[in-house]
Length: 295
Image (cartoon, rainbow, N blue to C red; front, side):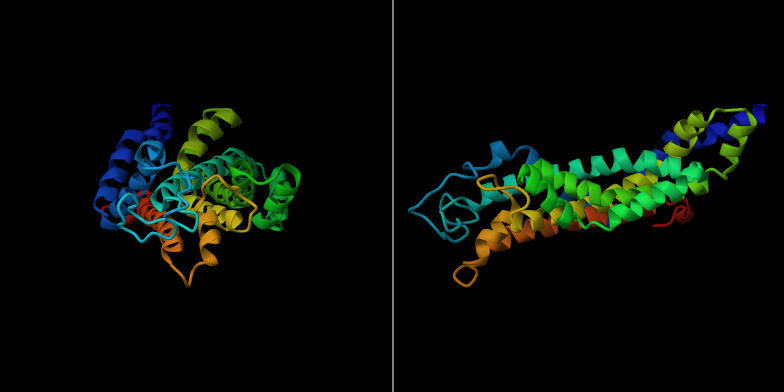
C-alpha cells in the first residue's frame, strides 16, 4: 500500500517541477526576451492612465500630423491631432484585456469538456462533434452575429475570439487526458478505489496544466490580432474608445501623406505577438520533460 501511495504522490511534486521549469526558462535567452516584452507591454497597459500624457480621445485641431519627437508629442499626432503615444498605450491595454478574457473563456469551457471527452469514451463523440461544429464558424461570423445583437465592443470581441478558440482547447486537453489516464499514477489511483472526480481533479487536471498554459500563450497573440481585425472592420471596439485596430483603420487613408499614425500601432501589435510567441516556445520546451537539462 505504501508503494502505491508513493506512486500517486509523485505527480503532485509541484515545487520541484516549478524549480526545473524556472531554471530552463532563465537559460533560454529568447524566452527571457519574450517574457520581458510581455511584462513591459502589460505594465504599460496597466499604468496607461498614469503614463499617457493626454487622454486618448483628446483632440488638438491645431496640431494634426505632427512628426515623432515633436515637443509635447513623443510619437506625433494623427489626423485629428490626437496623441499617438497615449492612444497606443490605451490600445495595447484593450488588446491585452480582450486576449485575457478570450483565454479565460476558452479555458473555462474547453478544459472541462476536454477532460470529460478524454476520460469518458461515451461522451467523446458528442464533444468532438460539438468542437467540429464550433470550428465551422470562423470568429468573424461569430463577431458579426454578436455585433448585430449587442453592437460592437470589447466584451463582444473577447466572446467571439474565446468561442473560436474553445475547440482547440478541447482537443489539447482531450489528448492530454487520453495520455494521462493510462499512466501509472492514475492506474494506481484506480487500484486504491479513488473516485472518478478525484482522479480527474487531483491527478489528470494538474498534470494537464502545462499543455493548457502553453495553449494559452498561443491563444493570446491570436486574440490580439483578432481584436485588431475586428476593430479594423468596425466589429470590435468602437470609437472613441482607443484600439490598435481602429488606429490602423484611421491611418490607412492618410498612408501616403504620413505613415507614423499607422506604424506605431502596427509595431505594438507585432511586439505583443512576438513576446507571447517567444515566451510560449520557451515555456513549451521548459515544460517538456523529454528535453531534460538541455538548453
